[in-house]
Amino acid sequence: MTGYAPAEAARRSGFSLDTLRYYEKIGLLADVGRTPGGQRVFTDDDLSWLLLFRCLRDTGMPIAQMCRYASLARAGEHTVDERRELLRQHAAQVEEQMRLLRRQYDHLREKIRFYERLPGPPAPDEGR
Amino acid sequence: MTGYAPAEAARRSGFSLDTLRYYEKIGLLADVGRTPGGQRVFTDDDLSWLLLFRCLRDTGMPIAQMCRYASLARAGEHTVDERRELLRQHAAQVEEQMRLLRRQYDHLREKIRFYERLPGPPAPDEGR
DNA sequence: CTCCAATCTGGAGTGCGCTCCAGGTCAAGG
DNA sequence: CCTTGACCTGGAGCGCACTCCAGATTGGAG
Image 1 (cartoon, rainbow over the protein chains, first blue to last red):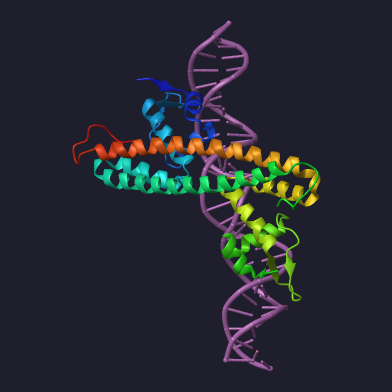
Image 2: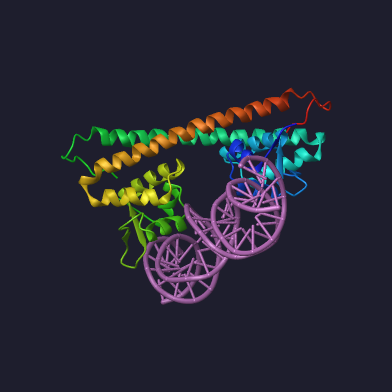
């Protein structure tokens, strides 16, 4: 069973050291192991939690909701339905987010094309 | 030339009244017209700025950068190159954002499929 | 053993983007 | 006129997610 130093866990998860400590402080990440001297040792399991958190954060889930998910998972097997539902609802929001993002990206591209059609000095209209 | 009351501008742009005032206060939106009594009147031009801001905000552009864009546009024709470049760079960031979002969305879906493959009570592995 | 980079703690501070408030003003319908 | 709902200003406050700090401790390399 491999153990990772904080810096290594940070590197692998993409979170800063401070963020790792913060996640532990607020109870998102629980029961992180320690050396006899008190320094953190992250397990593969911790790492896979972190990767999940990265996924959820990158898709815009608020931390409070991640906490909820994590505590459900810690509560045991009988919460699987609720966990699945939580993820499904989040996925639906992500889909909406992706649609919006694409739509606005298309607007943006159109705007850029407007600038590209401008030949040079002569100005047909102000480009707001 | 149509004029819109604040509430109408808010409705059409999707920004709150407070946000419209805030955007004016920080100089993002400039020269908004007023009635003799001092109440704002938004023009179609203001509205099209607001729609652009909505596009940029929805795609994650920080306000400082929108301010930069707006002040370039106000500075005149000689800034078109810089404006185009600014939008292009932003578009590139949005593309990156879309890639990341899709990638993490796929992870999320995989996670959900893991839960869906769980038949019921019997638990093959903890679903972190 | 010594050194020094990495890590520890609790708590304060930051940056962003609004959001809310009090106390007053405006303007359109009746 | 009068009422009433929309609007005005300046400034304080908020929620989120970190991020930074000081001052102490740890632990592997040499």
